[in-house]
Amino acid sequence: MMRRSFALAALACAALGARAQSAPPAPPPADLIVIADRIYTVDEARPFVTAMAVRGGRIAYLGSTSGAMVLRGPKTRVIDYGTRTIVPGITDAHAHMLGLGQALASVDLVGSTSYDTVVARVAAAAKRAPAGAWITGRGWDQNRWGDTRFPTHDKLDAAVPDHPVVLERIDGHALLANAAAIKAAGVTADTKDPDGGRILRDASGAPAGVFVDNAQELIYRAVPPLTHAQRKSALLAAIAEANKWGLTGIHDPGESRETIETYEEIAKAGQLSLRAYVMIGDDSAAEDYYFKLGPRSAMYDGHLWVRAIKLYADGALGSRGAALLDPYSDDPGNRGLLVSTPEHLKAVSVAALKHGFQVATHAIGDRGNRVALDAYEAALKEVPTVDHRFRIEHAQVVDPADLPRFAQLNVIPSMQSVHQTSDMYWAANRLGPSRILGAYAWRALLNTGVILPNGSDFPVEFVNPLFSYHAAISRQDAHDWPPGGWQPWEAMTREEALKSITIWPAIASFEEKDLGSLSVGKYADFVVYDRDIVQAPADRILGATVIATWVGGAPVYEKK
Image (cartoon, rainbow, N blue to C red; front, side, top):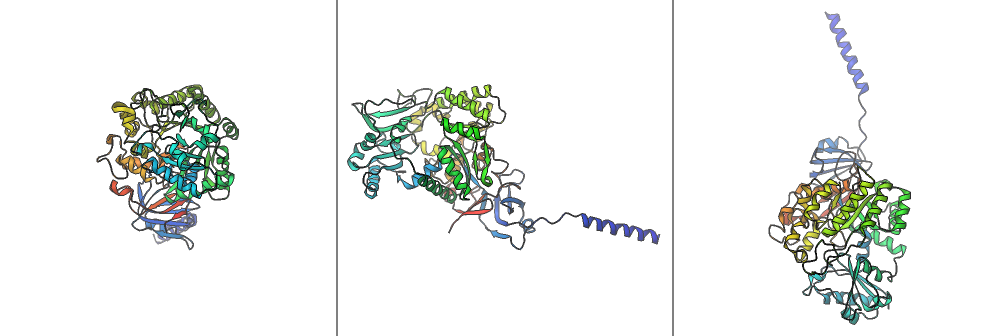
């Protein structure tokens, strides 16, 4: 019996020793441990935690503070944000970076409450400009003025006669030019409206100053092109501005080859401090060039993607260029503008499918959306593709008969919630009481089973992504008007609204394996706010401050 006990004890010791020898080595220490009262992950397996550990720019652990501290090494940086709140890195699913950079350097007309205000701001800028230099500005919106008719160039001519002036409307779908700019562009009463564009004219037929949609190119062709240095400076300024507001990613729809190559230059230099999903503008030469290269993803350590084409179906509602099935209620002879033919939309979509590229089409009016959906449907019949993730950008006014087609065709409506709160004051005048019910219809679309990646369309709207987040859940403007929200039945839940600026943009850009949520193995992109934007009352959301923005486990913005 004693001999048997000794033998059993010896066997037990041997087993313990073998187990000790085969125990896995301790994991390497983390580079960074972040602690906060609440870290929202947007990962359904564990919606919120109190700590995360980062190694090599990716998340190595999510859970409790004690669990994270197991990974603490002698060189691990530990940051305790205390009562502040962390959310996954925010992506703006529709943002114009070059436009933002140029806007930061031009005359700011956003919020101007009269044409006289616009003229005064331009005149002040002209006094500081070299003689004869072009003056550019953006952001005017006649819907905010007492007189909501489009302006003419007369007041601009009187105030700034010696400078060509080009002022872009807030939506980018119309511009106002003074007489000097019109003359420099060689536009006269004999100039015909281009396809998909309209020149507003005076009683004699001469250009009155405003050029809508494709007619803008008649003026822009005379504006001196950006130099490479100006383009790069504008993009760098826009990147810094985006980081300041908590953006770790953007989808930039419709850029030229020159701009995409500037993005690459910035990325190679390690200066692209966000994830940029850049779509190629609708230019046949650029499309051919990038089709030959093929889709490119996660270049420069996951900072740049070029694998999508941006098309245009119609114009914008504010400038009455959005293509409608029936005439505008406040302009009975006008059904808007189709800026591309249906045949063109289909042809580019077919070519994109054959080369493995995504297509995203701007469509705002119900006719514009139908034409885009029809083109996609025809292209997919010709080139059946399971995971194409085609998108419609804006999808603002959709006929009820077309709402289910998004899910049926696996088309993603990429929408900007803040547009609803900007347009709600006058949209019903454009559309009438029945058609307005199909506008900005987020709940109706969500109920069909699609996702809604959210954005701002900046510089059309403010860079701060919380404007769209707030609008998504409240259907109210920044002043919390109207009480109860505008068409409140179309609002998103808090969970949906957070997904709309995190994981849904990642899915819409084929990036969900690396981005969009705080999950082990994904990039450590996150934003630190001074308050809990998920649980705060709606009227306290827009007051939230970004404390820090992190991309790949490194801070790209920290509030001083």
